[in-house]
Length: 72
Image (tube, rainbow, N blue to C red):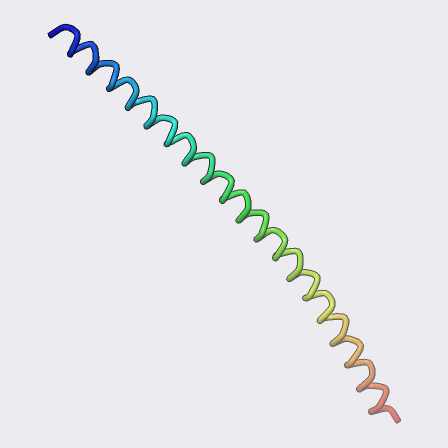
């Protein structure tokens, strides 16, 4: 009887250990996913800002050309 109790305790400990390991891995993968996502959005923001600046520059240039044409 004592032996069975002891085996049950050991089994429970092993189950707990496995559960903790699984959760640990889950957390790690979740963190990696989040970091990747943040990095991706960061890059996109930079690109958008760059595009915006270029668009402004292009529009300014087009406006100047139109003004020059109108003067003539």
